[in-house]
Length: 61
Figure 1 (cartoon, helix red, strand yellow):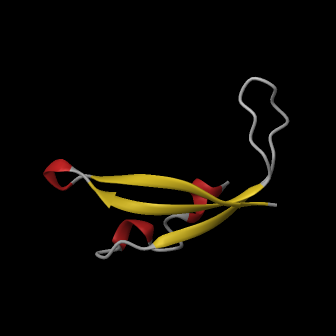
Figure 2: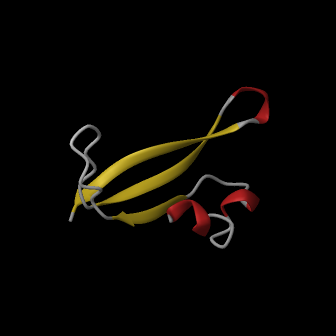
Figure 3: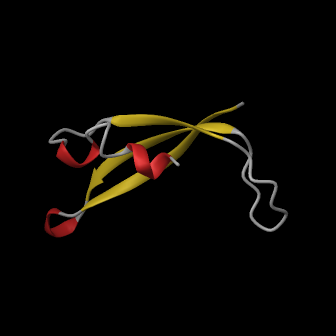
């Protein structure tokens, strides 16, 4: 799972915003369909020093 990679990729220690490319598989769901794709996860600064995650679909596999 992509979430499991974040610590190994240094996500939580970053001081500068940088993206991580995440390949995903489709989920086969009719209600919330996810196609095989490549996602870019980027950190964005929020109020009070909090950090959010912006997720962008870069390409469909």
